Each structure stands twice: as C-alpha cells, then as structure tokens.
Image (cartoon, rainbow, N blue to C red; front, top):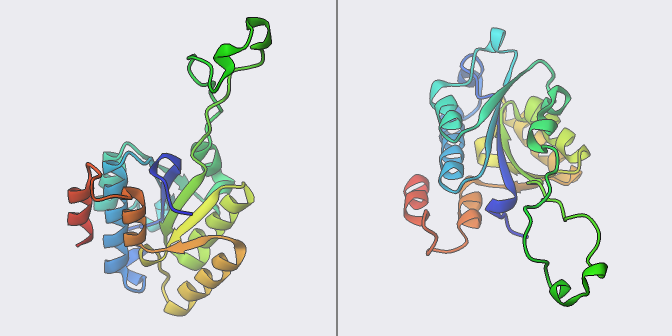
Length: 210
C-alpha cells in the first residue's frame, strides 16, 4: 500500500526551541520536518502541530511554526505526552458530513424511484496520519500508539524523528513497528504523495528533497 494525499494528514510533534538543541541529529531532523510541511502545503495535505508544556519548553521553532501556519494548520498545546489524550484525535477526525447531493452511483439511476431509499453516503475522513517529531521514545511514540488505538493508520517518518539519544530513538522505532506503525522516510513520503513525474507539484517537491 502506498500513501495517498487524499487520505493523509501530517502531524508534527514538539519541535520546540528549548528541546531541539539537545536532540540527536537535530539539524537534519528539523530540515526534514520542514520539508514535510512544505510538501504537504504544495499537495494540499492538512498539517497539524503539537507543543509539549510550551511554558517550559517554549514554542515550536519559528521556521517550523511558520510552515505549519503557512499550510493552514494549527498547533495543539498539551501537557499529556500522548496528544490524543489532549484531543488530537478530535482534530484529525471531525464529525462526519453527508456527501453533497448528486446523481446516484452505479446503476441506481435505473431503479424505480420507490427503491431509491436510504440516507446519503457520508464522506470518509482522512484516516492516515503521517507522523514525525520529538522525542521519538516519549511524545512521538505515545501519540502514535494513541492514534493506533483510535484506529488511524500511522506512518512514522523516521528521518524527521529523534530523541536526545540514538538508543532511545531506535528503541521507539522498534516498538512502533511491532505495534503496527509503518516506518518511512521523508523521500518515501514525497514520491508516494506525487506518484508520477507529471504531478503539477513535481518540480517544487523535487527541489525540496534534493
């Protein structure tokens, strides 16, 4: 299965000013998080952020927060390590809306009118969450597990995640893979969202990943 832009949302977890300097490979991690946010904006994938106790750890780094804002997203300030406990799932899964009226699908047009009964089909939400953030073994992992419990599909972008130590980061990836999350990289997300070199955003996305 490949990622599909119509099914995805991007969540960027806790890239905060007082945390990031202590994070292993923080420069690379931040650069990839920025690429993800910029690619999501180009391909109209909703973007969300979180910030853990911002009164203590500060806000997200300005460049990343600007990318979230530029994509039309918003940021959830939280105290729980698992952002789902603070309502993230409600942000990602808004109340279902009925599909706009239109002609019946399939061969329903040929049915007698008295047989064309039942409610309009409801729009499906975006059930695939592309997730990245820090620290991988704390807020990122607990949020991913919370989303899996809520029956979202979770794809963790490994090169946009880290912890203060490499060992904690890798232990988080092992546990997430065992729990059913897909582990991917920033470039994997980019080219799966594009699918073809004929995509209107291809040149812009290529410029971001090269």
